[in-house]
Image (cartoon, rainbow, N blue to C red; front, side, top):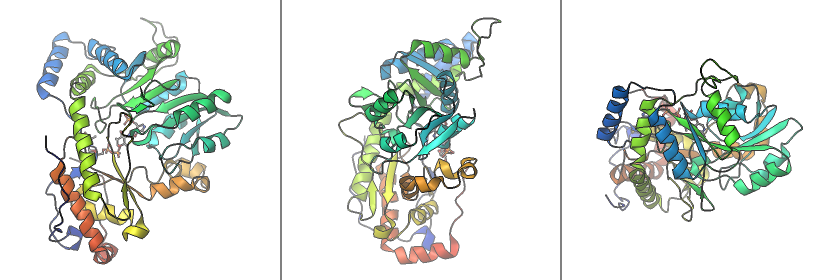
Length: 415
Ligand code: T4K
């Protein structure tokens, strides 16, 4: 295992935005998948093919569910095809309707899972220190139509769970959590996954633990778990007997095989994320106007995201200028979660003035840059990324001028 590198003091010969060659010949992505043993995955896939049981609550899915439930310390884990469908089903099974309070500073799936079933997501502002829902602001949004709150553990850092639990208890609202980022993270020593009525995990390719695509609902409520199991399988309670409206939310065997294999390497994934985090910390140290978000060393966390807040006034470059500068060096940094759900469609049209109630979301969305990490990169790449940033800041006037004349068009890149 490589150790943390000291930040290099040598500037890059020339930034790509100033006419030099890109620092990386291959693209560096945020969200490169963490991959466990190929051999073990192949063995599992062979077992699936031999057994000829490919989906519909197969043995691999059941084993995966049990292992996730044990890892998190929760009674029920229902694996699904992805976290968006898991959210939709959990919301429906919990009987949410009318209005549900959610942060705007989240991936669009949190809001869409509600609107998809004609429940209004009411966007709440965040606490700038934690990037998570502000409970006092959530309380102010409660109306007679409110039936619940969905907190999101943004970056894997826990929501103010105690405050939200007390609020929902007092106002008789259902509390759930979108824990898409938070597998392997804890709150006050307890693993995230067991709070509220239910928590939803994502196992998308880009997540700490992936099943290619996948998600799960975790709950300690046996009734809810039973209902969700039926709903993710069209509502079938047995052959020829449908007792709920349902959909197809099933996880396949091959996805569960990937999940089981990756679970065996979870400690390595965590070690790589931690190493990378500390490397970024060392390489960005002392840069006025850039601050790497902190993870609570007293809690368990997966260090899945390298999140940096850019203070344009102090840095001399805006977040967007920094992203564009990195992009031409083949570092595809991301602006999660810009511009906020409230500015995306259909919400931007439904609530055109929502931004007035979301000042912190608006500010944060313009400041955040997410940098590559995970098992695909290490200290050498991180050192170069940080040298690009330092060099860009040192030559900020020239960089601003170059970007003003030929700013790159930032597009999703396909393999
Ligand atoms: N709630 C929250 C809070 C979430 O963050 C998410 C998902 C959800 C709910 C819904 O979960 P799922 O229904 O997806 O299970 C990505 C992910 O697609 C998305 O899952 C994730 N959050 C979000 C934060 O990031 P995009 O659109 O920004 O990026 P995407 O999927 O194009 O991938 C990013 C980069 O990763 C690519 O540029 C290249 C690399 N990549 C991606 C894939 C899929 C690979 O190297 N290999 C791959 O197979 O959303």
